[in-house]
Every structure is written in C-alpha cells, then in structure tokens.
Image (cartoon, rainbow, N blue to C red; front, side, top):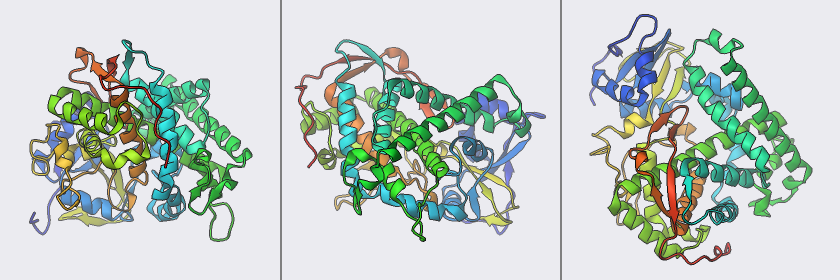
Length: 470
C-alpha cells in the first residue's frame, strides 16, 4: 500500500465521556475490533482513561513485530502478566529476551519431541480410556484437564496429584480471567483490597508456590543429571531437566529458582489454554461442517484404526494438522496483544511518541477478506501444502511473528495434533445442539464456552494399546 509522507492516527468514533470505548469493548470485544479497519490503518481507542492505538494493517503489523527493540512488549496487559508469570519469555523486555530464548531453546529442539510425544501419548490414552460409552462430558473442561496433566508430565516428568491439579486448574482460570479484567482497570484500582484483587493475589501466590514445590521435587530427584547433549536420556525426566541443566557462559546455573518458576508458570498457562482451546474449536467447527468432519475422521480411522496417536503417526495426519491450524486462524488464543514504543519513532507514515501503547489483533487480521477470502468460513484446505511440499502462503499469526514468535509453537502443534486425532479415534463426539454456535469468551485467551458432548464408540474402534515409540 502506498502511504502519504505523513498521516494522522484516526480515532474510533463513539467514545463516551470518561469511559471512552470501554462499554463497547467489554460488551462485544471481537465485534468491536472488527469495526476498526473501516476508520484507518492505525486507530486510537480509549478504554476509560487509557489510550491505545490498534494496528489494523497487515504490513504495519509485520513491521511492529519485526522491530521488537523499538516496539517492545509492554502496556497494562503485560504489567498484569508479570504479576502472574514474572519476567519470563512471554513478558521480558527485548534486551533480556535473546539471552532467555537462547538458554530455553534446547528444550524445544526437534530431537526432544519424540520423548515428549511418548509422554503425551501415554497420558492421553489413560485419560480417554476412562470415559464411558453413552456418557456426556464437557469437552472444554476435559481437554483442559488432559492438556494440563500432559503438560505437567511433559515439563516436570511427574504425576500430578488430583488435589494439586484441582488447585492449579482453579488458579489458572482465576489468573487468566483476572489478568484480562485487571488490564482494563486503572492502576490504583488494581491495588485496592477488593475481593477480586485478593482472590487474584491468592491464586497467583498459590500457583507459584505449587510450581516451586514441583521444581524442588524435580531437583531433589536428580532429574537434571538424567540427560544427554541431545535431550533427556529418559523422556519421563521432562523438559524441566534441560532447564535445570542449562549453564550460563561462566558455567553456573542459567536460571535461578525464581526464574524457573517464571518459566514453569508461563509454560503451564500458555500450554494448557492454547492447546485445549484449539482442540475444542477444531472439534466444534468440524462438527458444523460435515464434509470437513468426514474427511478428518476418515484420515484418523485410516491412520490410527481406533488407537491413540503417536509420534510415528504425525506425518500421515496432515489434514488433522490443517484442521487445527484453521481452528487457530478463526479463534487465535492470543486475540489481542500489545507493544509499547521505547523511543520516538514512526510506523509507516505515522509518527508515534515514546511510550505509545499499540495493540494488534491476530483475530482481526485473520478475518481480513483481502488476506483470507470468505474469512468466516471454516476451511482447512486453506492450509493445503503445495504440490512440491511448499508451505501455503496465507497469513497466520496465532503464534506471533518476528523475534518474539512463540518458542513452543511446534510443541503446541505436537500436543494438539496428538490429542485431536486420539479423541476422534477413540470416540464419536455428539455436541449438544445448544452449543451451536459455541460462545467465544475473549479474556486473556479466546476461550470456548462449555461444550457438553455425548460419547459413542466409532464403528472402526478396536481398543488396542498405542504403538510403542520407535
């Protein structure tokens, strides 16, 4: 797009005195952000007394994400996230990010994935075989439970006590809702001893204490010594063994206990909500589109034949991955994210002073018709690779872009693909008619509402153990 030499940032219409656009944003945030491109490439909104500039243009968003030292992570959302997860990979400034990412990266190397996949397969198989034919489950709650169990086993190499899981699940729900809610409040209100603020503080403290206890137990078990240069020698030792064994340039531990807790909380929060939500959305949208559901279940039946998916199956579960990707396009977990200018700068033709809070919305950009024709239609074929195996060209920002792209994107795909395929291998799922359409609940992540689902066995199902890891 050709830009004039200088341009003014537009302001969204309809702001109320004192409240600004906050009532519209709270009432229907997804619908509200989709109105903004009509007013300009950069559009200022007011949420109470706070001003935020929403980037509605794809190329300007790419520039924003590419230059993370100028457009660093910041704003009210990240201040609230730091209260929960400390200064980990998701929240640390650009000046610290490269060091942290370099130290954490080995834990997400492809060579580690077969071991992680074995844990995921074992835990998923155990969970799905406990369901009862003819019963009803809330898929939203159950996928969260499974992903949380799998994540803790994968990260910590430990069983999660049911009582601990219940506490962490409750705290996670409170923290995610609280972070988003508190990011909309003026700073002084976040410090008042209100019931909501006290509840949030208790949940944060307890989650960090529980994570600290899991880390201490892992350290006491000596898991850090059970590794090789290529990853954990025993996959049950988990991802944390690599973080515990990481060394700084002077040969000392790369991370303090507090930093390990920061990373553990970040992994738990991001890993459970994003994967569980993506799988639920994929199941929901495929159920609404019979041709998609038919092709998806045929692929899974052919590849798995009624058993739980394994690492060895992934190359043949191509359409399953495409379905997951399309669900992430329609409902990206991080639907609205913020950056802050660290100096006076420009974005395209727009001059922005230091301290400007900018927001970009993967949800909005994924629904631009010029980027995705018929953007509200669920179509996994958008992600069909080219005849030569080349990746498809469409825009996809569910895991971010640039230097701060999510380090766990392929980890999330691994867990999501194994879980989605295994669910439809073991069970025919019949969502209750009341879930059409399934409510979208935009908080910190774009969550699905409750998804009550009736369970029956597919015709092809012949219970058998998952194939052993090669």
